Image 1 (spheres, rainbow, N blue to C red):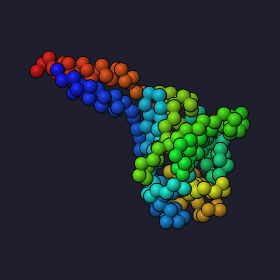
Image 2 (cartoon, rainbow, N blue to C red; image 1 turned 180 degrees about the vertical axis):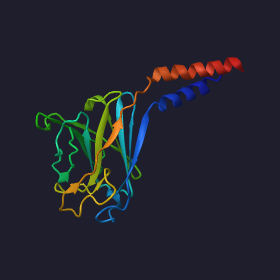
Image 3 (tube, helix red, strand yellow; image 1 turned 180 degrees about the horizontal axis):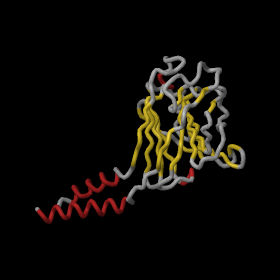
Image 4 (cartoon, rainbow, N blue to C red; image 1 turned 30 degrees about the horizontal axis):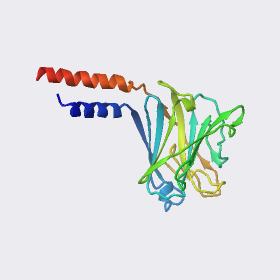
Length: 220
């Protein structure tokens, strides 16, 4: 029996133990379409048994881009955001917020929860994103947002500039202009939905793979 082939096949099976959904957005829908780095083309959301990953692809890339995620996991939260950016969430309250930048190699992302009537900056999580071409990705544990298999949450993603008063220049939740300029608040559309999908444990997938290969070997 070819042990290398078995190991390779099992590794592929284990690597595939994740589920994903891709949400596309219209491009060239900004108040100034010269900002290709702020123009969201798509967002992919995926989960494993323990983590969730968001991957945002923009039409172009520049390291001054800022990213904001507005996440509602339980129907509560607030219409504000932890960065106090001028964003009208149109009723899509958030109880978790991720704010991130790419002009710093590590510790460039913040996960903040809305608790006891405010954004809890006394107990927030710092982590790092990763960038490849025009795509930036973030991975956090499901537990950090109170999620588990079968959980559904709603969310929106927006890009912004480096100024504290900059709005969301592009919102995944709408396919038209979200703001008329840097000095004007952006307006979100309807939040999108994602359901955390149950993922078999890697050990179970490996056993299935091995059983299939052994059976095939015996029949040959």
